[in-house]
Image (cartoon, rainbow, N blue to C red; front, side):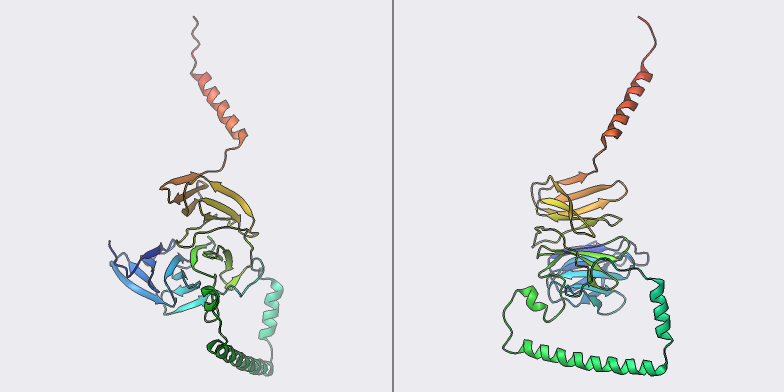
Length: 313
């Protein structure tokens, strides 16, 4: 099948868990995300919201209707393809430390106590929220007036855009990968940053991944283990494996002679596949322990001994 796109195509993605649709999400130099239906051979949806082209796409691993897009404008947007408009935009300034805390019984008890309050306390809380909203609207109006005035200065495109809309990276979002459980999202940017997001709260977990150098003009394909304890990311001509929760470098894989663009982790065989501009696809496997090799040698020798005959000369 052939789909005519309005510009250069940077990414295409299919849902790994979809059972009710056969859609391919495509991102191009156009500001719209286009969904192609394999069954009908036509475009079915267009998602508008980015201020520049779409560089990376990723489907949710917990819902077949949720699509995640990353653009040249530095924004990461969440879409429900059944509805118009995105329902979540990630903000790198909205953060929480570490993983999401578990739900405790004491928290549930407190919630039940809050539900049992009198109507007078409820009306008071409504009035308090209304007052807070008025204060926030006044502060927002004041900040917008300052931006529109002569005090606005020329800054980095990613930083200046953060005053007008939320950004996940100071630059283009080059890669997206959700964890298998659907609870976290990993994103890479042309600012050579890797970020871990809590999808439920939409917060930046502030995991400080050690120094890396990433390509800025091409989309990158990240990989993550099922745990998800390790994340693999192409770093120029090498691939780095980071601890997902601490950000420390676990291992660096070197073997390509040019920039690496993509990597894929096979959980069944515990193998990593990487593709590069040198036109090579390398397969990385965990090293075999020395004890296992010795056991294999012993089995081979036993096999040879069984094949020997008992004839005498």
